[in-house]
Amino acid sequence: MSTGVTKSINLNGPAGTLPASAAKAHGFVAPPKVRKPLHLGWLVMTIYLTFLLLPIYWLVNMSFKTNVEITNTFSLWPNNPTLRNYTVIFTDPSWYNGYINSITYVVMNTVISIAVALPAAYAFSRYRFLGDKHLFFWLLTNRMAPPAVFALPFFQLYSAFGLIDTHLAVALAHCLFNVPLAVWILEGFMSGVPREIDETAYIDGYSFPRFFVKIFMPLIASGIGVAAFFCFMFSWVELLIARTLTTTAAKPIAAIMTRTVSASGLDWGVLAAAGVLTIIPGALVIWFVRNYIAKGFALGRV
Amino acid sequence: MDKPINQKAWFLVLPVLLLVAFSAVIPLMTVVNYSVQDTFGNNEFFWAGTAWFEEMLRSPRFHQALARNLIFSAIILVIQIPLGIVVALSMPRKGVGVSICLVLMALPLLIPWNVVGTIWQVFGRVDIGLLGHTLEALGIDYNYVRDPLDAWFTIIIMDVWHWTSLVALLCYAGLVSIPEAYYQAARIDGASRWAVFRYIQLPKMNRVLLIAVLLRFMDSFMIYTEPFVVTGGGPGNSTTVLSIDLVKLAVGQFDLGPAAAMSIIYFLIVLLLSWVFYTVMTNYERGGQ
Image 1 (tube, rainbow over the protein chains, first blue to last red):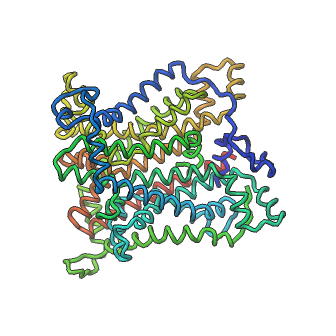
Image 2: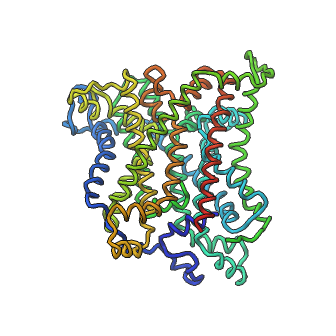
Image 3: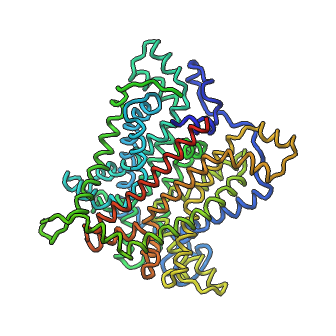
């Protein structure tokens, strides 16, 4: 189903050249020498990256200022740097619990998504079965479903099961778009592993679960990493559903931000500090997948 | 590629099927249920048939939100796709520069959407934001809270900031997959820079570009959080796109019937687009073998 994309994007050599014995040594080899970028490429990149970083810098800048300084003076950097805004967040449970809530449901969602997507992606990449194409398409439509359509019915569904305001509710709800995504990405990576490996393992007497865990999963480790990254990313950035399904106990940080701002007037400094702290987890995880991120986008076709 | 037929593969798909059925099919049935019923409160519902659908399809409010959303998506594509290609072509190809560029470019993608909204809400303010302040200093009358055009400018530049990297990353993945031999052949033929782009790089980026176009179209068609935080759909209704309108209708006014009918029409449009996407993709892959 995805061989076309796989073959053209695969950075680690053509599929099918990987001997079974090399399974352990399987890694990503640097791509061959590639064409130089545009002549004025560095200029374009400088301008583009400046454009990307300026708004973020402005937020960081604000987070180190006092509210008086933010509203009364206009300066490109904090004149009297203060940690007061961060202290507010780290000493108030209603603030820092938001981060714990967000990370809890994001991790739960990632684990659930990957766990169910692994066998399904294997089935899609290795076998044909009744209705496989329809099923794959149906999964795709869920990735494309507007969250706004689902907000209200989700609320009623999870109320009926008594799951409102639990981390599990948000984790399950985010499966709506993350499971199809994970299946998609994993299927792409799995199709890059030649089927001869499976067959050799079965001849060697491996059972399916043992083969899958011992041989197959290490082979697609980077694929699992990329899929987990994308699940993390989309669960971390989503707010509409997360906010709808929670009231206090599992409220995500992003929702706490909006509420506190409207309640206590405009505490710009704390708002900025809270925003900066939501950027950090993302920045950390990107660093680990930086070499696969483009691959993940393309292979997973996301 | 001929995969063996194995009906037992269904067991491997079953967990996904159950999970997605729980989080997609059941809620969708609820929506269908509301869309054909009316209520006077007290949890008493009675059959309304297709009345809500007819009302919605004739409603100028829905037409306007749809038109605004289509215009928004069109502008987004016209800006982001060429810009993404240029950025991908400009990216360094080896050394530490690659990692730094990749990480910095991916950064906006990992910021929660309402924080993206907050960043631009602050950044665009005339009193405390760098962008607003600079524009005012240049003598440009800019106020995204009051002026619809400025509000549009703000949400478009925000979306460009947020998502152009996605297009660039996809194109970059396509570019690095081009074998060096292609370039050598082009050099021997004395091909110009433009010819290399037009006949080697662009065809090789075709697939990823297709993905980029369709993803950007669909995601901008469902956009909610970022413009909601920045403009709240205003001034007036000038930036009320479909999702914002739907949430206003469903949660704000609690008009369940019309909201459900609108959800279904909205979802059908998305479904149609997904089908086009899927067909084009699979045909492309089959043809590209």
